[in-house]
Length: 206
Image 1 (cartoon, rainbow, N blue to C red):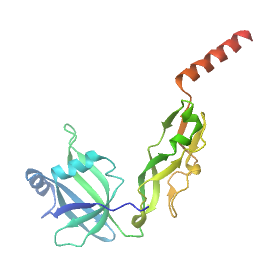
Image 2: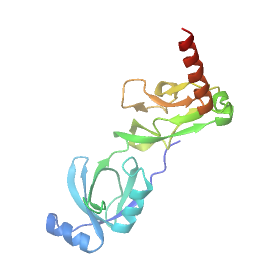
Image 3: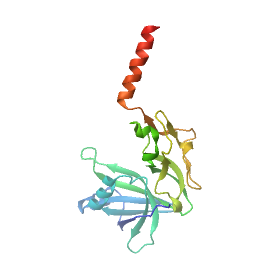
Image 4: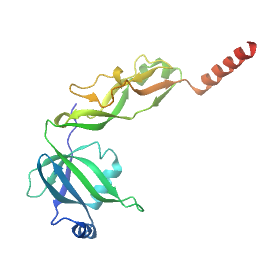
């Protein structure tokens, strides 16, 4: 399922440089720049509170945005950098890169886990330990998946789930070549304690 592309409303910013950026901040805006796609960089500004809300919602850097600037054609962008105040940790400048529909880009995609009730390991009291709640994938700008899915059916205590165990959407591939772990099913603490006691007893007998 392709991810719906959310709108990001901005304004064209007159002028560049520190003076223009300071003026934007005085007006309650965060200055930014849009670059790439063989075109001239475009200075923009975004309303501070709106941007801060989106940043705090998470996944801002891994989202493809439909940038809307009054008087200009909409353009698809991804955020490539957010500069923040070193004391307040609030955004002071933001960079976006333009994308074509067919542009390949690396983004972090959320991992969903389903069929918990069909995992014997979880029924026995095991715990799902998520190693990577998001995975960096190479995707096409027009076909960014909303998430990837891990099916827990049949998973036992001690099982590890690797990226190669997941069926990825067509045209999507991990940015890392190795078969890394997404999650595992750990034994319940009582069972782990029991196993440790048995191991200690066997060692004492030896």
